[in-house]
Image 1 (cartoon, rainbow, N blue to C red):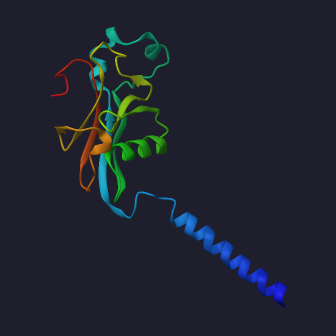
Image 2: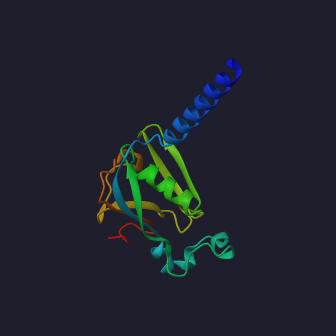
Image 3: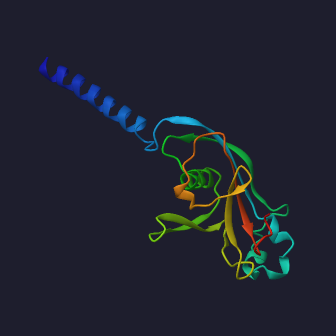
Length: 162
């Protein structure tokens, strides 16, 4: 009788532990809303003569310049643009490379879809926009509230995304 009771209690504890682990998997908190996110490299299409040969050889640049069409994503209490981008890229199997910049206390996006900064000239790289406005802070410093329209876009020369 004691062994059966012990076994039942053990099974219940294991189930409770498993359930708490599954519920606690999201360390970003509760759902708070949705946003849209798009990833584009359309400016490259007008600058194909400047593109690193490896990008051309491996057919990395989409014909229409769209890496991720406008997608609706759920956001959580602790989400920021960086955590959202990282999650969306993982879900869509899009390569993402980044570094933490301690001086600025934010993440710097080095590459999306194997398209790196300076892959299309010395001033090329990734920028992001919120509701059509260029962001004024690093991606991990912009906390999401819900309803934002986020665009990650590759710039080749200063001013080409205006």
